[in-house]
Image 1: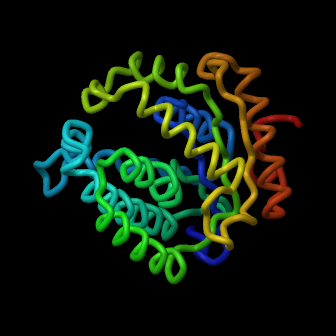
Image 2: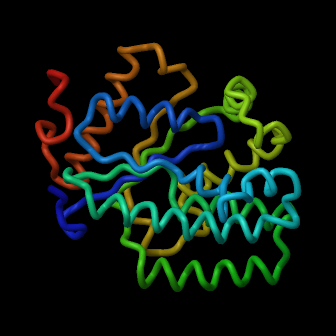
Length: 241
C-alpha cells in the first residue's frame, strides 16, 4: 500500500557522469527498504517512440542543449510523481534531480556556448517558477564524489553509444559545478542552502567490494535518521549496525 506523498521523505543521489550512480542505486535496492527512482533514460532515447534526444544532444549540443534540458526537467518530475503514488516506503531515493540539471548541466551548457543567453534566461525563469511553486524540497542530497579522470575511465568502460563523443573536458566542467553547488553552495537559491549533503568518496570501486558497500549504506542510513528521523530498523533491516 502506497503512503501519501506528504508522509514521504525524498533524497537524491547526485554525481558526475560515470560516478557509478546506477550501480550505487542497485546496491541501495539490495540493502535498504526504500523506493528507488532511476533517471528516465528510456524516455530520453525514445521520445515519441522514435527520437533519441539523448543521442541528438551529445552529437550537437548547441542545437539540442535547451531542448534536452527542458525535457529532462519535465520527465524527471513526471517520473518522481508516478513512483511516489505507489511508494510503500517512507523514503524515496532519486537518481539525479532537476537541481543538478540546473546547477550543473544547464549551467555548463550555457558557459560552454551550447545554450545562448536568451535560452539560459528562459530556462532560469521557468525553473525558478516551477521549483518554488510545485517541486517539493528534498530532505537531502547524497553526493558520490569521484575524480573526473576516474569518471571518464568508467564512462569509457561502460561504452554507452550516446556517450562515445563525451570528452574529458566536459566531465571536468561538470565536476567543478557539482563541487560548487553541493560543497560550497555557490550561486544557489537561498532556500536550497539549508538542504544537507552527505558526501561519499567513491573513487574506490564499490561494485564488487561488499565491505565498501556496507560502509556506504551505513552512512546513508545514519544520514536518513539524522535528517528525517527515520529509524535504521525501517530502512536497513538486512545489516546489524
